[in-house]
Image (tube, rainbow, N blue to C red; front, side):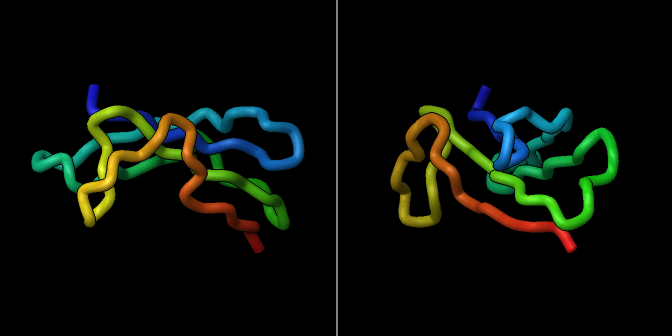
Length: 72
């Protein structure tokens, strides 16, 4: 396993059921929620794992939030 990706509701911390897949070169990950995201809702996207690095080669720490967003 190269790492993990987690999508959560920010107000409750509940994990949103989703699947993720890595590209063959492990440079891109695609997250697909199992159902549509709720409107006007804040989410938190986390990525981590010992083998996950940014473009500069820095290792992500487990559970590092890389994006918070609100749906329209």
